[in-house]
Amino acid sequence: MTGNRQIRKILVIKLRNIGDVLLSAPLFSNLKEAFPGARISALVNSGTQEMLTGNPDVDQVIVYDRGIKSAPLFRRLSREFAFYRRVRGERFDLVLNLTEGDRGALLALFSGARVRIGLDPMNQGLAGKRRYFTHLLPRFPEGNLHAVEKNLLFLVPLELQPARKRVSFYFAQADRDHVAKLLAARSLLPGGYFHAHVTSRWMFKALPHDKAAFLLDQLAERSGLSSVLTCAPEQKEIDYLAALRPLLRTPFCDLSGALTLKQLGALSAGARFFVGVDSAPMHMAAALDIPVLGLYGPSSVQEWGPWDNGTMVNPYLAQNGVQRCGRHLVLQAARACVPCLRDGCNGSKVSDCLDFSESELKTAALAFLDTVESGEYDV
Image 1 (cartoon, rainbow, N blue to C red):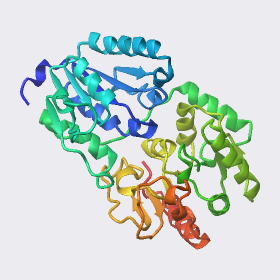
Image 2 (image 1 turned 90 degrees about the vertical axis):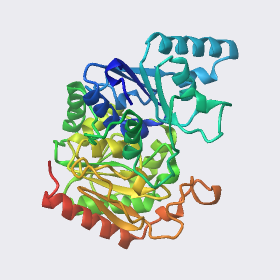
Image 3 (image 1 turned 45 degrees about the horizontal axis):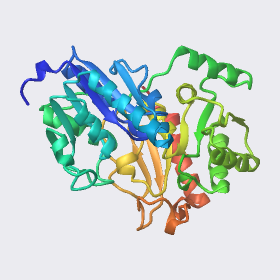
């Protein structure tokens, strides 16, 4: 593509969930390097903006309030129109819409940007959506390429090669201080605990309570560290931890529902390691270069495994058993149906593949702690 020097204002649209937004961070760093004088903005859903706020590669985060969709029709249309006018008023030169939905495509079109890059709609969604963009990328098959690499493919129409693949997450000193105060009140110091986030917005990603407790006890006993339990302030996640806590035999600190996303990152940053299911907090810990033990059920490890900033590649080639990527280790069942990419087995919202045996959990814990204790992957 010619005329890159004329691009002064860039918008990246990522209307997805928390972890998806975080894993787009390397795209911003590459755009900042390629267009050092440009003002780069992100447009994300409300509730996900903390993944990019504070990032020096992002000059502005524009938040789409998902609550608009539940407003009465007239009010909704008025607020939608006002939001589209705001985007139009920014006068972007380049827009990259990273997802397939209609709203992102409409925002790209109404932005008036000279260059608009999106995914081929493949005759899905709004009529004529292909013409909303000046450049189209082919749709990426699910499970075959890591989300970080998928985002970086949007550089191809700009004739750019990714120079940086580091996922970064930023929080303030105030977040660190708040977490330190909470931990000090429980006689915990940085490095004296591990962070356990074994819940998810989608609870079909969670282990049975007894298996999660067994794993946390194994890690605590063999590391000599207390676990710090966290979850989102959602009732189903709080209820999960309420049922888990009585099963634990080892010391733990319960911060369930008590922390913001930034504070969760600050907690992980002071932990010796992180253990959890496929979730945004897991990706945040990996972005902070904290060793991660990930527990995977129906998700694709190759696409959604913890990204290792040390290797900058995704070597999760197998989909079975204990898998390693730099400082991180993943446990996923060795079953023919894994990964199925579904929300549980047969519509049950429960994933049988996460009912690991105690032997499997013990093996994974030992293998992971060997890596952590060796310090081989310390930054």
